[in-house]
Every structure is written in C-alpha cells, then in structure tokens.
Amino acid sequence: MSETSRPGNYLPSLSYDGCEFPVYPTDKNLHTHITQVRDLPVRQEDVFIIGYPYSGCSSLWNILSSLWTPSTDDHHGRTGQFHMLDCTSADHLVDLSSPRILHSHYPPRYLPSQILTHKPKILYLLRNPKDVCVSQYIHTERGRGRGDKTFQDFLDAFLNHSTGYGGWFHYVRQYQQTFTEHRDLLVHTLRFEDTQTNPYKQTRGLCKFLDVDMDEEAISDLVEACCDASLIQPTKRVKKEGSSDSMATTPDIYYTEGQVGEWKNWLTVTQDEEFDTAIRQHLDGTEVELGIRYSL
Image 1: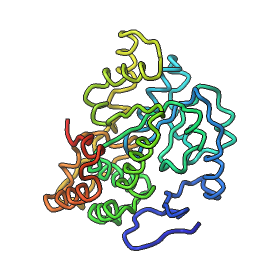
Image 2: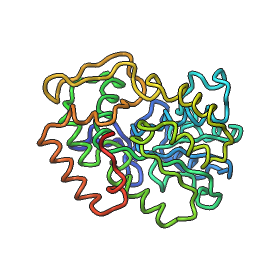
Image 3: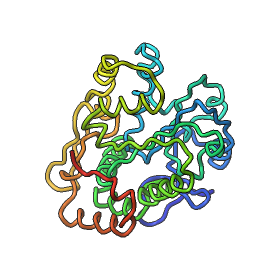
C-alpha cells in the first residue's frame, strides 16, 4: 500500500491491490480496513446501496432510512456515511441493528464476500458519466477548499481512470461483469436520471423490491419529504460562468450536484467529443452504454 502521486492523478489516494482509494480522514490502515470489510458477516435482511461516487447514493440512503423509520426524528440529519463500508469500522457495522442499510463505493471484489452466498438485496445506482464528472469536480473543489485545478485537469484525470476506485469506466464494467456472472444476486438497478424524472415511480419500485408495504398516499408523502430539492440537489446550484475553468462556490453545497444534464453547461464541444470517444472505447455495445441517460 502506498500514497499514489502519478501524472494525471487528481485526488489524494492510497493504492491497494492495483486499485486507488480516496483518502478518508479516518483512514489508518487501508489494508486492515478492506480485509475487515471483506470478512464482514452479511445478513440476508441487509440492503446494500452500491454506486460510483456522486451517483446519488446519499439521497437514496435517506429514502431507504425513511422506509424503515417513518418518524423523521429518527433519521433526520444523518447521512449514509454513518453506514458506509468505505469509512466505517467493521465493529460499528456489526453492532448495527437489522435491517442494516449499508452503502459503498467499493468495486465488487472489495465488498463483503458473503454477499455471494447470503444474497442480500442490492440497489445499484448508475448515473451518466458526464454528470458524475462535473459533480465530482464541483464537490471535490468545495470539499477540499481547492481551486488550483481547472475543470480540464479534472476531466483528463477522469478519462484516465485517476479519480478513485479504478475510475468510472472500469468500475461500471466490473459491476456489469459481476452481475452477469452471478445472476442469482438480488439486484435492483436505478438510473439516477429516472429518480429525478419520476421519484414517485422509482420509490414505488423500491417498495416492491424491498417488500415494504406502503400505500400510495404514504409513498407520495415520502417522496415529498425526501425527494425535494433540498435533499437531492444543493440549495444553490453551482453555475459555470465564462469558460469551463471558472467556478462559483457556495457554502450551501453538501449533497451531490443533482441537476441532470448539468454537463452541458461545462463541457465544451471538444471536451464532449473527448468524452464520447472514451465512452465508445470502454463501453461500446455493452449493456452499460445502452442504459446511460444524458438528459431528462
């Protein structure tokens, strides 16, 4: 395990087993933590939220928390990071009561191995890579208080798989392969864009998949409470002004930048062509490519 600092690498990271992991403030020994996560006992009633960073995992965690905890007092103010495999101690995860809602950005080979035998339910989020790239850039700049890197710098890193977890393209291909090889896994795929277009329909589908008995009125109330702009989108949108290297930051940003199609305000024609070339190179003809939605 070593600190990674190679050309094109944008985020501070630790390299382990050929994969780069973003450095969390609580990281002490990545090897030990990953080993403990892979050995984590899995319960059949667990629910795993899986997705590349900035794909909407936190918003989905809030919705699921409400499905099992109708009283907002019990989950208000919490975020999925408290049940996040990537940065939560295994001892804490073991002590959580069921049903556990666990979420992770880890590639499949670093998830608890018992997932393959205990068959918990998996919610897999897929978001178009152009919006993921823009959202990750905005959040990283604000979260780390940095402004020294241009959007072009970050785009180059994103297209070169240097923004963590092996990069978006390798990440989604690995999950496609895993779900294809293990078709007995209980997987419900959610496109981020669909959750924004019709949150009621998507929430109803979640209830069915999770065997949660909730009537139409209760689903509507849940959507109104959990799927408004204050949870899915930042209070103030970050808008690009001038060139792609300009960015206005605001202290109101906390959740993932949730605008579908925001990439249109950031990518130049040339940058968009670079992106499309990478998409064809890595995803041409795959189910992933067919499932990507770039606008509402």
